[in-house]
Image (cartoon, rainbow, N blue to C red):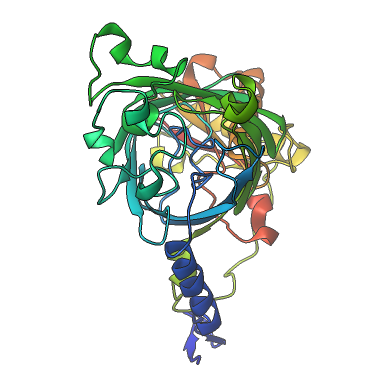
Length: 437
């Protein structure tokens, strides 16, 4: 059903947009499937590497529906020789905060939460804390609470005399993500619960190595490296004190996919019937839930055509002090480029004139240059591209005589897109200029 509404200042009648009932039914079905999925451990969140967390969280209002399938790499008595599936729903209600619910089996559901303490857009430096596997059972492994001894390091009674993992009911961690140049990122952290292992090698990477007895609150290290070999494809290797995993991840905007070779320690360090290992395929569909269910009141035509770039303005010798007129204009870039175009060079000349005039008038003239990108390519790649765009604009202004000490650059990558429709992505590829004070 639709109705009409009149735009201010015009007699044009336009329809009121309604969310399609078919779309709502599709989202409801996907949600039910995710909540009822059979289970395994897996790539069940776009803010994980494979099993190890990163400092990334979902953007505000983002809803992520994830699922994966895992199967055996070898057929041995110590391997789980069947295919499994899992499902998760994640949501970010506030900036820097993410919640999720994961189905390990039809009867085993667990909650997780993550809060980003430091850092900005995904793919940049960050520091986060989180909890994982908050459930109703004393022990829930990624194949369910009834199969806690299905893997080495999971059935602790087999290794430790009557050791009770009481607080395996939940896991906790602190993790940091550190970019290494433009195409790689290192993730490292400390965790308890699912991050602590006591196998013949992993036992050396947790705090109980310093004690004669085992402790329920032992802390272990974990880490991982992601290297972008293409703008949208990364090679990933990670190690917790339970698992050694490697694989490939792809970031294709709303769809993120992964293929991983997991529990590689069972192939590298075991032989014969003791060998084990898994292959996993996973994917996530991520979208803006607020936008998906929002009902705009009206859609109005643009009031006026965009203003063309102004002609080059000379630096004035004197100017009347009217701060409200010192307006800085944005510039735009071609796809995957950071070069200054001819028309945008004229805008930079105008911005330089404003900065110089304000400084000459004795006013604070510090400027922040923010680089932005459209959603194409990965988040990490776009953060680096936004930084290059901001730096190009800074160098151009310095060449026009602006004091470098007045200019600060920052990058948001694709984190703040004012335009979310693909035909308007060219407006996201921009640098914005704002007065610091």
